[in-house]
Structure formats: C-alpha cells, structure tokens
Image (cartoon, rainbow, N blue to C red; front, side, top):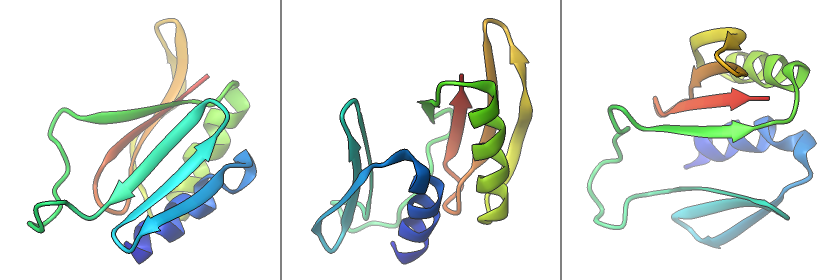
Length: 106
C-alpha cells in the first residue's frame, strides 16, 4: 500500500485531486469528475492484477499523455505502449508497481 500511495500521489500531484484514506487498507484520489482507489483485497488473499483488465484515464491532451507516461516510468512503472495515435485517440500504456495496466488518453 505504501508503494502504491507513493506512485499514485506523485502521478496525480498536478491534477488537484483530494487524497482520502477511509481505512488502513484503502486510498482514494477524488476530484469533481474523477474517482480512483487502490485497496488491499477484502478477502485478505494476495492482490493480483487482472489479465485483460485496464484502467483508463482521459487526461485532456497529447502533451499530458506524454507527460504522465514519462512520469509513470520515472516512478518505476513499465512501458506497455509508447505515446502515439491509436485510432481516434492519442494514448500511452504503462504498468504500475503492482503490474496493473493503465492507459492515458487525450
């Protein structure tokens, strides 16, 4: 949880989101039209990433896609697709520290 909080705090630092810690096992990042959370599993079993599961963030511009992709890599994330045009969207893909797949798109 500590590594996840550090990764997402830094990734979302410029977004003006409020960080909410409702319990020791969960953290939310909340904005007017945005909500994201990381949590330790309710069933107390080890956390795993979902094969075929991806979380997407619409970040508003090509420049922001590039910025967040680079920041995620500097924070220890792993590239899953460099920033470029994919169909109607400019997007980039990374894995976070827990191997969850993230997409940033304009």
